[in-house]
Length: 396
Image 1 (cartoon, rainbow, N blue to C red):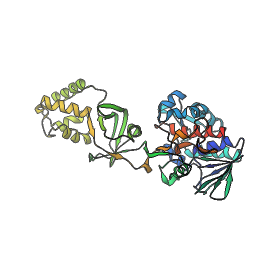
Image 2: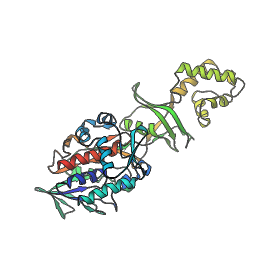
Image 3: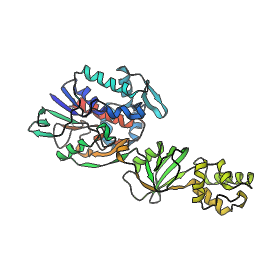
């Protein structure tokens, strides 16, 4: 059987490797090389997977985790780890069970894929953009020329367009009457209205909370970075994937999550007593980063020149409340082209999760980021690509 796979990312390459065990496989890539987006992931180190079991993995999927059961049990994170090591790629596990090549070079990961593709005699077609797919009875025709028995769409999403992720797969899906869930950015920075002049300031051990209809819908603890337009960093990326389809919510930053209101008030009172004749702005440096103090005092409606011994109980209560609930005025998520992952894509309702085949068009398959499946940071999204590619490849 003659198979065409469109897209040379991890999903497409893994699918080609497995499918070529039984079929003649052609792998089409519009770029001059395979794995162009994979090359820049993990800041050039490639966070290949997460060293966890299937149940833990599924907890980290944001959208349509039930769809992933068959794929993730076909190729689990543990299996992926040992699969690549057996192919000759030494790996290491870092904080959060993140798996990286021991060399810290994403190029070494891509070389392993390429080596296996050559061994399986996959016909790799670089600089080959697929502009049209047509169905002619039992065959598919690419660009009005090449005829194939089956087609696999592995074209990715919309993030990092320079790597070739330009939404081609959505166009093909719609042509064959598939619904495409609106693509929005996932794992992305957040723009704010606050107008902070805090670019470059990093806060550690803080908590970012999202509240909608008086209920906490997201709570993330860890590191946050202020940018020129808003905030980024690990807890912001995770939060963005949880709110990217929400409206009318509020974001708060707890600057001292390890202290409850009473303990924080006692700490502030002690600092004030020990520095009673100093300006409150200077005293607050014992508790908060210097650049942040003026904004906190402004929100608490306290004059920064005021002496510590002049602060009233009511002002201290406002200060505690502000530190524990520092409001961030949400403007938007950053542009999808800068997102680590695209959230949305081909509706999985019309895809068979056991084979990745379309329920609408026989012989047409969708894998990887083109699907409406996405996860949090930590190697989970590349694992989704590998698992769906593997599952498709063994079922073609």
